[in-house]
Image (tube, rainbow, N blue to C red):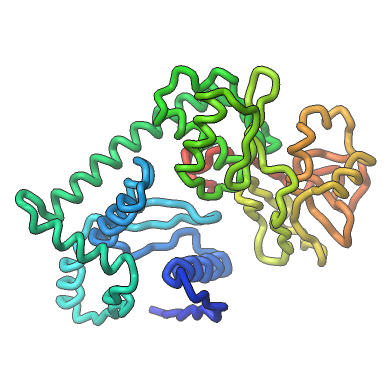
Amino acid sequence: METRILRWSGPYPKTGIQEAARNARYHLMEETCVEEGIGALLLGHQLEDQLETLLMRLSKGSGLDGLTAMQSVGLRGSFRLLRPLLGVRRAVLRDYLKMQEQAWIDDPSNENPVYTRTRVGAVLTEMQQLPGSSIETIALSLSRLQRASHSLDLLARQKIQTLCEVSPFGFIRMRDDALDDCPDELALRLLSAALRCVGGGQRIKLSALEQLYQRLFKERSGKSGTISGAQIQKSGKSWLFCREPGRAGLPMTGLGPGLRKWIWDNRFVVTDTTPDVPLPAGLSLGALGEEGWRQLQESADSSLFSAIPAKVRHSLPALWSEGKIVEMPLLPTEKNTEFGPGQRFNAQFRAFYWMTDPIS
């Protein structure tokens, strides 16, 4: 079996080295999977890793969602992360490898007391010495936390279907009284899901979310808020959720040969509908922006503009070439381009993608 070694060339931070190294590993593996057309990545996390994650998050004040630790199936970009060994103890895996006469490598940082996870591992060992405690009972607690979180996810999904109006242009509307009859934990989950959906999937800190919820929905002392790249604003008798207006750093991705589907800003899937026709050189996928919107108004059907709130327009995906809009996948144009009026590329809003089957 062929082995590929992926090397991180830095730059290397002076603090937070483990988190930076973890992000670098995932980034390198993601790039390689995309290059090789691999749709799923299997990870070796096992039971002790899972329980250490639980204790680390418990020590930092995580809520129910965080205390469910790692999931057996997750998404990163367009491919799956699979963790088939989360219920298997480390010793069992080592015994199996010995039986197979297969060597393994232990990460020396796992024994370095400087790092939090090493110290948490020692705490996990101590906990198993308590009367009635074992790794199996701690794992049982985790399983029950996951069951409770899953139940809330199902309730949230049902509420979203009845309370949220999802626009194909990447924004969401929710009735202004939608959260009034929800228990706080369910309301926070709904609010988090809507914000994450329009904000590019960025992690939302629970304490910041709680403050936003308290101010807007409990105290009714504000009409807007921004958090993790998303904005919520009162609009008539509803709340508007959208990408933070004027957000800097939206991706600009060159469209080279080989790929025919791209996830842009973790919000839209853009698909080439004529993959057999070569792409022209210099084509990029990026935000429409103020200049793109100006160009679009000269060629698009103006009757469509009213469907897009002003604060949403500039953060929509568009195809660029040499500083000009080539195509706006969400809005067909009358402009005569080499692709025709909006016929080559299709864009789809990835609304609540983690609550449904991943995009194939």
